[in-house]
Amino acid sequence: MPKTDQSLNQDIIRDFRENNGQIKGTYPLSEPFKGVPVLLLHTRGAQSGLERVNPVAYLADENRLFVIASDAGGQKHPAWFRNVLAHPEVVTVELGTETLAVRPKILEGEERETFYQKMSVIFPVFIEYQQKAHPRLIPVVELIRQSEA
Image 1 (cartoon, one colour):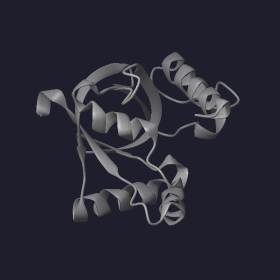
Image 2 (image 1 turned 120 degrees about the vertical axis):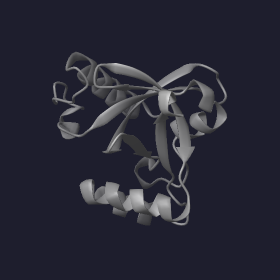
Image 3 (image 1 turned 45 degrees about the vertical axis):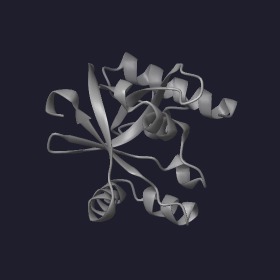
Image 4 (image 1 turned 45 degrees about the horizontal axis):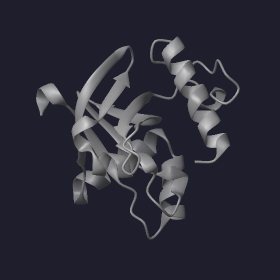
């Protein structure tokens, strides 16, 4: 990950943790994400085995959580998605002030399309990301709380 991406993530993570799970734009690089619903996704590195933390925009639909592995429309899946595939058993999220164990489920077909569309209504940039990523189909991941799994 380029240094600027690491700095961006670190600013968002600090802002999130200092403001009880909300992005207030406290730091220069976190300001564009002010008010965006973000969770902190904890994974284990697919190759390194080290813990990784990534801020990810999410959609809450009733009691369900969804994230999109867009990598801003890049041609490859983001590292966090590869980590989720490699080590689904250790995925947790910080949501607000809670830390939750979750089980990731990769959505397919109509279900994937439904939640990608819902996310695109809230964050229209995801429409552009899918166009940029073509032919890669951007994954949608449901994060199922372990108590519900």
